[in-house]
Length: 127
Image 1: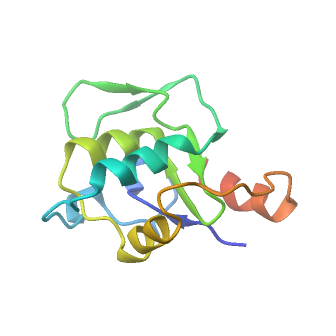
Image 2: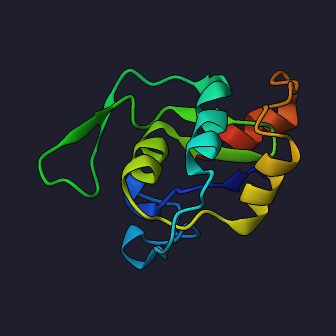
C-alpha cells in the first residue's frame, strides 16, 4: 500500500524524503472555489499519528506550528498538521487527483481500517 502525499515537502523533514517536492518549487495559483470545503474534509479525518511537538513554519521566520508533524489520512492520501496551515494560508496548488477524490466523496471522509499492517507501514514511512 502506498499513501499519496498532499502538501508535504522535503523541508518538513530533517532528513530523508528526497522524493517529496521542495516547498520552494511548489506550484501556486488560483485557489479552488471550494478550498474551504476541501480543508474541512482534511480536518474531519482523524489524526493517525498525533505528535505533541512543533515544526518550524516554512513560510514565517522564527515561527513554529504546534503539532506540525502530526499525520492525517483518509486511507488513500496523507498529510500533516502543518500541511493544513499552509493550504489555508498559501495559494498552494492541490493535486487534481486529490481534489477530484474529495469531491467524489461529497467532502465526507470514508471509514477505513487503520489496523491494517500495510496501512501502518505506509503511514509510518512519513514520520
